[in-house]
Image (tube, rainbow, N blue to C red; front, side, top):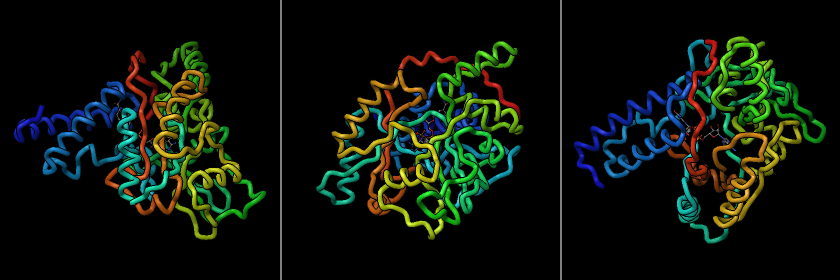
Length: 338
Ligand code: NAD
């Protein structure tokens, strides 16, 4: 049903207030009070109203923003290359519409190749290596400014403190981006020990990972079973000769010693993406980590560059989310010591 302009403006105000509140709960306090599917539903409602009444789309709209401002308790880090979000597709039709949209925009009649990646349910981090040595790590924050969590990231078992240069000369500067998450088994054993010692139990692996990583005392982070998988590059110095495919860049990161998600693969066209989605959806329960969908990225970097970005997300990628399942996870308070 189409709303009148007045009713739409009033609903936009309500949605701004609600989504802002949920963003702070989720990104700043690591303690959401509503499920992700409820959040996604409200954001989609806002986007639909904005599409109908473009004058209601303001620069401060939650539809235009990434995450939330970093906590002042941490030192702040500016991202030279912004850390953006992803557009979402909630079903096969929306995914097919995305592949058609990008092909039309590129005036491309050939089948496009996509890097297909599980959408890990943790939190995005940027890690900077200078001459192969880890010198800084930060959260995404609001996309432009994040929190300095270098000491905490240093404690993550599979994050190399020094890159290996067996096959390639190490670049002067390399920014790796990826997800910090907690495996399902790590999450279970953490909660067991929290119960035993009278600590607070965590609602789900995502909250446990976020609460563990954003600690002011890195000795606490060191005791938490966090893991990292790399999924993209940020700022890279020109002394590194980068491959022209995203998937090949991921393998280059792997040769430097950075861990990749084993389920990453390349598919052709919408059909290939949908098959990959089905395959991952079937494996989902058995995977050792939580995911909330899959991400498809145009593999050819030159095509990515031609497509560019909109306010909060690249035009060349999309996250196909799993349908809202019974979200039985209790949204309990999580331990958070700031
Ligand atoms: P997003 O989760 O839709 O997509 C971007 C994020 O995906 C990246 O920042 C990265 O952390 C992650 N990601 C995982 N695997 C990736 C891969 N292979 N390649 C690239 N990125 C990958 O966007 P968002 O802005 O982080 O969060 C929005 C989502 O968070 C919402 O859709 C909602 O589900 C949830 N959320 C929930 C609440 C709540 O109150 N429950 C509040 C805010 C956000």
